[in-house]
Length: 223
Image (cartoon, rainbow, N blue to C red; front, side, top):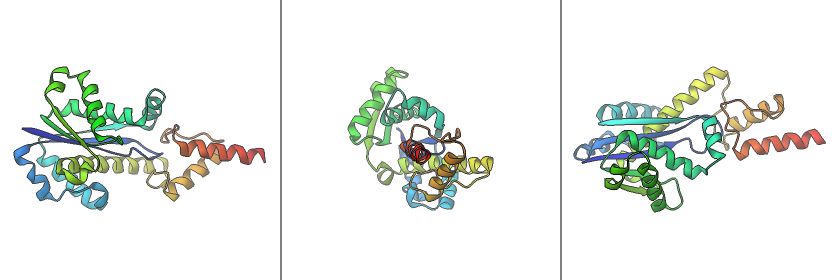
C-alpha cells in the first residue's frame, strides 16, 4: 500500500511564497524515514533539514512541492479564505501523488473537516480515486507521522531556498518573512515609507501587517 504525507511551509509569512510538500512511499518501507531521523521540521536546524531533504528524496517513491507565490495568494484571498486555499493546494499535491492513504497536517481548527474538504476538492479532478482513498487529517501530524514530517522538511527546505534567492535578488536581508520577525518589520516599514505605502511583488499585499503599515503611514502624513 502506498502512503503519503502532505504539509505546508510558509502559510503565515507576509513575504515570499508558500510551499506545500508531499512525499509518497510504500508503507512497508516507511520505517526508513524514521531511521533517517525525520522529525517536525521546526525542531531541526536548517543544515539538518537540508541533509534530510536529500535523503528523503532519495528514498521516497515520489515527492512533489507546490510553490504558491505572494500574488497568487493575494488573488485567491479575494475569493476564498486561507483555509480554502490550503484545501485547494493540498488537493493539487494529492493529484500528483495518488496514494492509497494520505496523512495530512490539518490546516483547519477542525481536522476532520479539513480531510472532508480535501476529498471534496479532489473529487473534482480524480472522482474515482477520491472514493477509494483514505484521508487522515490531524493537528501536528508532522510530529506523529514520519511521512508527514518528511513532507514538512522538503517544503521548508524549498521555501528557505526561495527566500534566500529573493534576498540575493533584492540585495536586502528582510529576515524570515514572518510578521513577528524584527528584520521583516523593519524592511516593510522602511520600504513603505520610501514608496508611499506601495510594496513589491514579494510581499503579500492582503496581509493585515501591510494594511497596518499603510494605516500608520496615512496617520503620520495627516499629522
